[in-house]
Length: 585
Image (tube, rainbow, N blue to C red; front, top):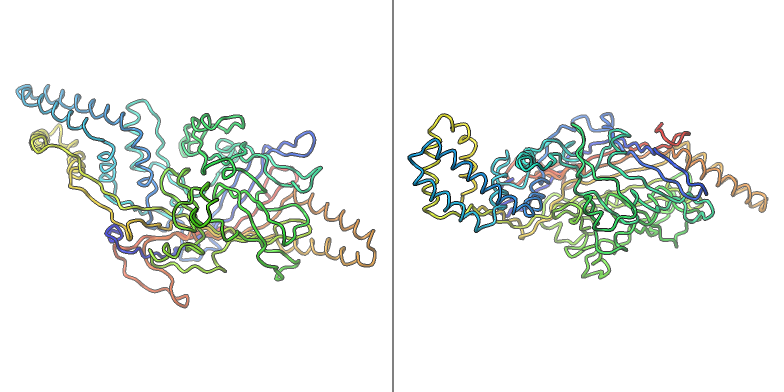
């Protein structure tokens, strides 16, 4: 979509929904001796649900989106400037030594040229030239966009061509460098995979203090939201690398050395507080504020009462995110701790991504109107894009929920300068390359090297986005969760029918209701049998292309250079805790 790089408004289209069933398995479970805490690990995995995905869609559909590798490349290369200078000098020394050995008569010419070239390279930063050179070798060329299958864009991929080149260079220095790219969600394909890449979590069971039931003590063995951003432990072929397991006694510096980073500023913003969002303490009322740690945005969120829900076998209270949660620091100063210094409506996740990356409500619902104005094709709707939890008040159980989040890239105008070499050096180097490339022994090297050098030495290439700064949606997810009909009806009969009879037999019926409710909660914790549907309209990939407009009809647009895809996914989630506390049914 080259027109987007020249300042045209991107035109987005939703691709999807691609539906997956999600399975959550608790394993390595240990109950603490006093029964008040439980420690466990979690495997979350997804299976593509072809039966409920529209027939014309496939996870191998391709979409054009922002390339996460290109976005992260500056953060990778800048710290390597010293190493790049060493490699450049070593490469020049080796290359010129080979030339002098092959063409001894040219030594008088080659040596001054080598010294001149070394001096000019040492006088400038090399990482921008390497950055540009790596883009020059990619299929997309000098562009921040890529085109890949939607399943790779969402779940990640292996053997990225740009990272593979970096890995080769790093290998020359004896450094292992990963070539895999993580997606915006993680699919742990086995218990062993989850055990290798995840640390254990600990929660309260509610024994002795029912108000603390299901609340996190540590999430992945930390009371702060540490995130593995630089996995240093390589996996086997076909496995993603991992960080060393988190230790609860690490300092922030020790955690950073192991590849972990905190997303926000200060302990309060980074705290792990609340439950996992599937249940809360019994006795929930509209006056309560609920707390849940939402790992997809690396923070604890508050939920406040929004409405009463009657379209369910039992009455439910609907809780949603407060309106000030994603306001920027200018409108809500306390949000400065969440690094919210951009437009309102964005959650700043740059610290954990390593490049400008944000979360928002889908289609920029409730966000700064400027975000919506900078792109075409979005249509925010409260009913389709809001997050909510429907909670049964007596038990605190979440009977139905939708967690909807959108991933957003931050793009700024950027200049890609050419390699700065003097005119005499450039002329001499061109002649030297011409002579060397005429030799059959060098032709295969020249076939690869010369086009890259010509690309790098081009005059400055610029990316000029609409408005100078563009927040471009990548994908949004709609995670839908609902207890099954049998559980809901059984709960109604057990709890609500007992409560109604309590009007006649107050003491004994209230006691019975309490006992039944306790039994229900125990069953919930021991089995946890619930059915979710996860609608990932953000595996509705926001591709720069056409969009649904008007009365639900799709407006056809010719494919042009202003198109970028936007991925949408739906996931069906089945979560259960088997009798042996370890297996999914």
